Structure formats: structure tokens, C-alpha cells
Length: 568
Image (cartoon, rainbow, N blue to C red; front, top):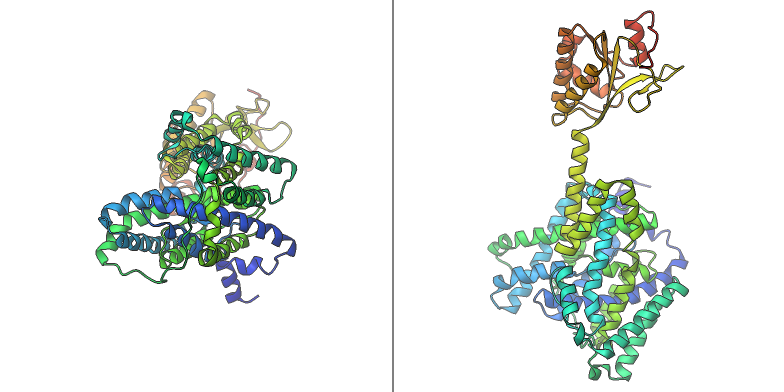
């Protein structure tokens, strides 16, 4: 395969997997695409209202972004859509800027989407996807559990015929509990029936398009029994036709004002899309390219902006609906976009009878697999620190939304990583009986200390922020040996790197030991560590740092006749 072809397929993953597409996958992708389209359209219309835009803007955003996202994403199940978080952000920010002018509001929203696309391309250029790797497995588990509860709080009012509320999980649940007496019996019957059918289908008919049949049944019931007259909220009229496609005329000052909003939307979309993609990649055992997701987001938002929409990103509930519908490849997202296009052009009237409680039931069933109490218990048993990360991610989602939940968990993960780096495991080594191998003598007391020799091991890089701790630990263990030590060996086989502070630390240890009359030697220094010490001038005082100097080799040079090992 030639170089340009390889680069093209790397940039457009669909060109790769379409070549190996199996006919058996098509049925699942079609069914998932149909089910997904049935959910994307009402979600798009609802989120458009949160953004302060007409319903058509939500459809256009889902339509145009969906037509290209599938080509560039490396995730097989992630679906691009408008999201409540971004929609609320757009609406609250652009309202004052538009000053009540609907046309200007729409133009600002479309321009924001184009700016998000530009930021995503910059992120791909600088390969910023590595940042997403700091979202640990513990963060993902807490994130998924929090998302399950958060989405449930947003769908329960719809299931019961109540008006929804904005805010975090606690505000939504508080509103639901306070208005529990206002539930609509017909909505509960429709939503509960749909929920029961979906749960039965999930248990007894796995991998079957149960959700699609429930949607069709809901459309039939909405039209046949005049459910709106009984207080059941229906989807209502879906706008018909396509917008003018192209860039909006904006002033330079508008771009400057929109930049903070675009950056916030990009950060929200990038983190959510990556977290969703990683979740599915782990579940279905494939690799997610975080950098490639920036390209997919860029293409999706560029098309959404040109198509008079507003910023889009990966959507958790939509992606779960897609997965549960049987999606095998991103082709399901393209099929959903084509169906939205078809409906927008010709068939918008047929969806007005779809009951909102049916859509709520689909989402509730989709999120049941996210909340895994067993995973939280496993983390608790493994590490209290890791559990605290998962718990903070969960509580962050519930209290501050999806973005803050992931960011809080990621920041805690970084703090734990820094803590481990600041206080690396350090120990004294002793000879494993009957061998030339040296191992931890503190943890394994059967290992034998060598009389007159102190052997120290540090498990981690020695850097400016932990050099003082390593020095204190070295002399703490040395002093615990008492008098009589003639040589101290610093085992560097588990030290992957040093900085200038680390090199200065070894110089300081050597000088202090010489004042005490103790010789100081290094063992098993890697080539990178040796090069760092040479550049720091360590060899001027120490002498040449020889490769392949094991602890045994160092001791044999110092003690031509080996002393008897001590079990103490």
C-alpha cells in the first residue's frame, strides 16, 4: 500500500473498515440507524429550544454533522448529536449577544460551530488527544455511573408526563419528587408499557430491534387513540425543508466575543466524545484514536455550522440507543442522518404522533447497563484512593454535569499520579539466599543483608519534586543499619530517568558519605541515566559510570573475598 493511500485511510477510517465490511453487519446497522433517527429528531428539536433556536436548527445540526461524522470517527458506536449541556451553554451565552434578534442568534450559533471545528483541527494538529489518556478507568466507571443517574433524572419526568426541569441531578430529582402528585396516568401507562416491553425484549430477545417496534407501536397508538387528548405529550410537528448552506456573515468583533464560548463548547464536546468512545472501545475490545476523534468533531461541527445548526459532540444517550439497537459500525450514524434528511424533506408529518414517554423509556433502558455497582465494589476492594477518584467523578456528574464530572475525576487522577511520583517506593535490598539476585529485604525478611554494605533501591524517576524525599529515605534506611557500613550502593535499575536535581542528589549523597568514611557506588544505571549524569558532570568526581554493573559485580570489586551474608 502506498504512502498517500495509507495517510488517507488513517485520516478517514471509514475507507479502511468499509473494505472489510461484512454483509451480516448490515441488518444491525440499519435497525440501529432507524432507531437512532427516531431518537435524534425529538432530541434535536428539544435541545434547539435550550439553545434559544427554532426546532429546525436542532434537526439541521444532527443531519449535517451526522452525514460526515461516521467517515472520520474511530469509534464504532459513538453518535454525534446536539447535547443538552452544549445547548444550554449556547443559549445562555448568545441570548444577551443577540439582543432578541432571532436571525442574529442563529448566525452566532452557526459561527460558534465553525469556530469549534477550527479548535478541533488545532487540537489534532498538536496531537492533544494524549490529554484524554489521563481519564483513568476509575474515572470512567464513576463517570458512567453518574451519567446513568443523571440521564435517568432527565427522563423520569417525561415518562410520567411531568414538565422537566433544568439544573443538576439533585435539582432535577427534587423537582420530580415535589411534583410526583401531578403525574399523568395516561403518560405513565404509555411510558410504563414501553419500558416493560423494552426490558422484556432486552432479556428474552437480545440483539433484536425491540426499540424499533416500540417506536412504531408508539406512533400507531399516538394516532389511533388520540393520546394528546389524554394529556400525553407527543413529539409534535417536525419542520420540513433544508436551509441555505454556507458561511454566515459575521464581524471580526463577533468572532472575538464568541471565542470563549467556542472554547467551552470544544472542551465539553472533546471530553464527552472521548469518554464515550473510550467506554465503548473497552466494552467491545477495540482501540480508540483520541486524536482522530478531533478530526471527526471538526468535520461534524463545520458541517453543522454551514448548515445553520449549532455545536455538536458525541451524545451519551444517543450513543447508547445506537449500541442497544445493534450498531456494528459507524454506518448506522450515516443511515440515521439519511433518514433525518428523508423525513426533513418529505415525511415530517408522520412523526408528530410519537409519544414522549416512549422516547424516555428507550433512554432509560439504554442506561441500565451503565450503572455497575459491582465495578464500584471492586475498586473499593482494590484501592480506597482509586475509589475516591471514581466517587468524585460520579458526584461531579451529578452535581456539576458531565464535563465537570470527568474533569474532577481526571484532576484527582493526576493528583494521585503526582503523589505517587513525589513519594516513590524506596527500600533496602538483600541477597536472595543461594543466588546473586538482590531483592527487597524489608518486605521479604528471608533475604540476607551483606555485612558492611548498604544497598538502596528507588522505584521511579528521581526528579526535582521528589529528590528531597529520596535523599531522606536513603539516609533513614542507612542510619537504621547502624555503624559498620563501608560501602553504599544505589541501585538504579528501577530508575527510568533523572533530571538535574536528581543528578545533584547523587552528588550530594556521595559527598555526605565520603565525609562519613563510606564509599558510594552505582549499580545497573541505564544508558539514559548514565548520559544524564555525564552531562551533569557527575563523572568528574565519581569516575566513569560503567554499563552492566550489577550489585553483585560492584560488591565483588569492593570485597574481593565476599563477606558472609547476614540474615539481620
